[in-house]
Amino acid sequence: MKWLNKPDKKSITPIYQQIKNGILNAVEDNRLLIGDNIPSINKICSEFELAPGTVIRAYEELREMGIISAKQGKGYFISGTQIEKKTKIFLLFDRMNAFKEILYDSFRNEFSEETEIQVFFHHYDSKRFEKLVRENLGKFSHYILMPHLNESIQRIVQRIPEKRLIFIDSLPPDLHTYAQAVYQDFFNDIYYALQYKVEELRKYQSINLSLSKSDFQFVPVAIQNGFAKFCHEHKLQHNIIQNITELNLKNNHLYIIFDDSELLNTLKIIQKMGWKLKEEIGIISFDETPMKELLAGGISVLSTDFELMGKTAAEMVKGNINGQIANPFRLIYRNSF
Image (cartoon, rainbow, N blue to C red; front, side, top):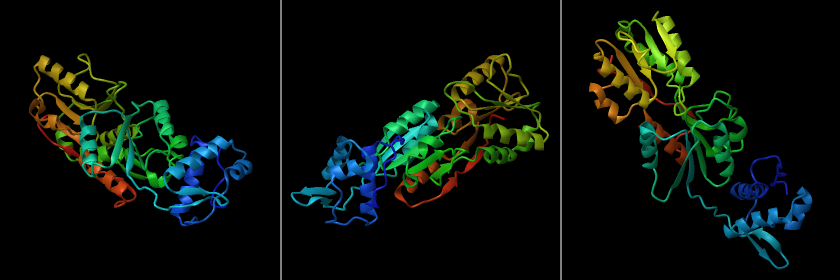
């Protein structure tokens, strides 16, 4: 029984699922062939000190899959090796917004209608993130996670087999896994993108990065650090502020804004003050959406290519692309600064 590891009773993966996965892995690796006997329920219970119901559930699910059968006098044996390869995807976003729709549509369009994709949201809540992953372990062929959280997620994601795990949009800094990823390199992305229009930025008294502090927006620390490095190196006066209000919004200053609700509110204040974009105040938004090309004559945007990100993640699921890939990022220059 070398092909079946002792179940880890401290694991968040159910014991029955560990037994089931052990047999399936042995079949996939040709360590178990058609006709090979597998241990009886009593033997596994005795060997690993398990309750019979746990092993019965594992064997029953394998029997329903056509992998094992039982015969009088012969016990349990491998009766099939055609493991269903249906693509069933667990997709965990932080929250839904306009650019996530672009990302999702791009990803979804790369698969046939038979592919099942279930979307979940953690809303920047690490406990909800862990609960959603834990409750769905072993139920999907692939797990695609958007880990926009300040807490470590290593403990939970290490329960997912690396070959089934893909990170999207962000790569956790404390990650100890070689799982695949298509991600934004937040520090370098903003640092290099702003250099494209550094001379246009110099006309403003200061460059202000608004963190858009709310429960609905996550601003990676790496972006703040990349922004600060760019401004220091180019000797630009700069500030990192918590949010934008009518009291702290000033003309002849430029504001980089993450949250779309804050963007709209800021444009309302500018309109109320009678200031002209580009001439008297500057705005750069984060994350491209079709609306921003038309809004207020065109809003300049710092953005990764979400359509390409979705396609790349899909190719990783299909096995056509491997590795940890930084997604392209750029400054889209329009009429707002």
